[in-house]
Length: 430
Ligand code: IMP
Image (tube, rainbow, N blue to C red; front, top):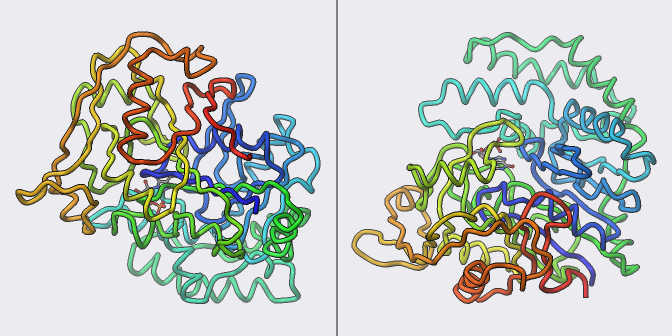
């Protein structure tokens, strides 16, 4: 068993990209198994900023094989841009480093057009990234999606696209009052992408991963978004359209849970959320603004300002339970430097009761009031710490408090965007 699942334990943007990049140093393979270009992983290497949406962050290590597996909705335009960006920075020299499963759902411009049209006319907005994620997964579920492998089979893609846009254009023009999608343009763009992506085509990603796992290779599964955005167990309807939980690494790639050794929950030292939906610990005040500013909390995909609040242990315990998180990696602890005191939500008050378990409906969660405990802050900058012992005692207390409250070991602390700003308490692979 050498599969480790790394996922976000909150509402996304926990700093997974940086940590996957760091964890990749000791891995052989990194796999992305759900979501699409709604994800945005910002990596800072040698002062170069690289933003990835679909390609796993392990790609920056030449020896790492990166796989995009069946559960992903593959935005052709986005992946071509990412490949160009990587090659422009001197990465992805060998095309064999990246493999894209033929079973991925192809995400096309009409998915994005419908997503954007729905968001702009909706009474109850979700605040999606407008990257076409919902409409693409809808097509998969209704069995009308084009899959990546279709682009290379002897099928009439033009006819398939024509058939698809017949319905989409009806919706776009008649219901949403938008421009229709042009078939010639769509076909040319799709075939151009297919030709450029051919070197990355992988006929059976599940079998490839199985062989890696069987031969004892170290395999990382990189989650996208966060657990509370899961389509079934998140704060529905304010969620994304894929399963973001640990189990989706198995279903999205096609392997059994018996091969999973650890589930690492990446957890930000505070909480953020983009888009709409309940957020009990949100700080609509100058403290929230300070965290936002110090933490650079602006979306990597849409540039939107992230809502900020204290760490929510009710939500974190829930996330640990529904994912089977075995270890925590705590990120962005450095953002608290200069704060007198730090709040942590340990329970909620709901309808006159104190509760420690996450309420299941978004309506209840909207009404939940956080019960906040206060811990002393610190002035020092953490960014140059080399070991846990270099941290101010109040920062160490904070880490210990969280670990004790949730009963799950904290193995890694991230104290800045750089690779070296990572404090290891326990190695990832034994
Ligand atoms: P969608 O995934 O674009 O449909 O957006 C649905 C919800 O998930 C919105 O609230 C988005 O802001 C949120 N979301 C989607 N992807 C991410 C992500 O990578 N990080 C944080 N929030 C995300």
